[in-house]
Image (cartoon, rainbow, N blue to C red; front, side, top):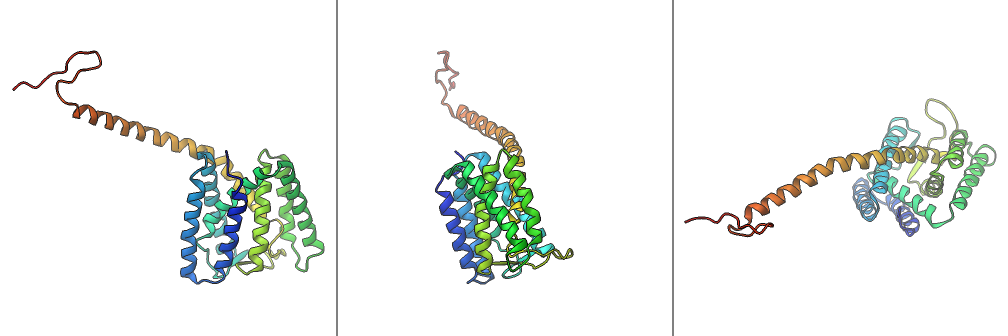
Length: 259
């Protein structure tokens, strides 16, 4: 088991509603939406295997670093209130789980083919047909295609791309965030959203897939001594509370108290 198939519908639906609500609230409302989204992520992670949980948590961590760098520091895009909304980090985890569920709901080859064709067509359109030039986005498309072609996790990357593409188009259309016309400091035209935005998610997912097994291993090594110590303490406590004069396993009587 990786992620239930119904996550492919339920989680994107939640994210779409979340982005719509964000356009109607103040900073305090954003904080409430952030708390709710962390709760939704925790509930979504609960039935999953430890490795998948670790992967989603790693995506949240790496994506948050990317958000701070890309939005707050570099200014490649900005959110409606020019901050990093609290719901964005856990939303990345939900996007990852949605992508996994989507890759399980359809044939892997179909998902990969749809992602490859969609990314290629979007990249070409950004250079030729779209009213806003998207050179920066087109540069990122080949990277995504390489992972879709060579990686053993291609179905996961493809599923995440499809979810990201839908949410990017939706989020920018309703004004939840907006991409700069040019990459700050470089002057390279960028789309809103850029066609290659999912290539960034490939790096988040790649790092998560690499780091998560190590995280699970370390957590297991740390928890095992704690569990053993706790179990030993419980057994010692039970032995201390055994009444005097009880029979041991060998049938010999334990020492009785002498008055």
